[in-house]
Image 1 (cartoon, protein in one colour):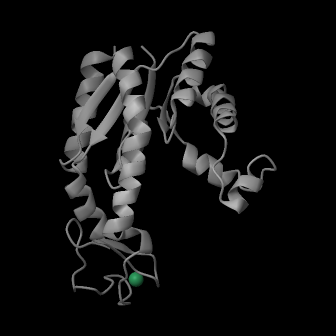
Image 2 (image 1 turned 120 degrees about the vertical axis):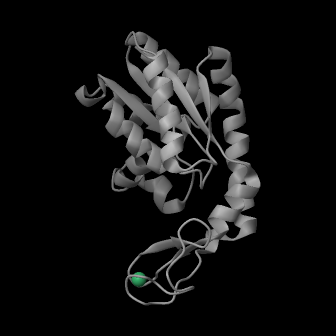
Length: 214
Ligand SMILES: [Zn+2]
């Protein structure tokens, strides 16, 4: 069976790490719409939205993803990350795949309790000098507040404070609730416990795929 996946997960759930591992292990193309939009920043279709900070309209995102999915490297499977974000996008995606005689095989949803996310994200520390990244909880630097690589003083990103994190989580919850309902009805949601280590989370996903998608 084709491996056409979608990956959901709140900020701080380790979605990027899982996406890389899934893509490598199952040889499916990782399509991050966030990356695609950033790469298209000079494209006349996207530029006006990106420079003004406005949301890119649904239809433009849908067109971008559909165009990308028609390329040869998506034939054997793909992993969508950051898409769909709205019910419209999800429905359009289904219609499009149906025309190509394909469908979404599985939707992986990494779940982490809110208080864990807040702990994880508010513990993030970055080095302004060399870009090194640390975490008070998950990956502490050898000496507190000091970069392991270059000795500079570590700082906290502005959007990693608890209030902003809470806002980001609320946006995520509001966006995904309806999508999770949509894919639950379709019968292909797989909930994954994101409080485990990245390796354990991946093992769960890997076992699921090996046992269910032949
Ligand atoms: Zn550094």
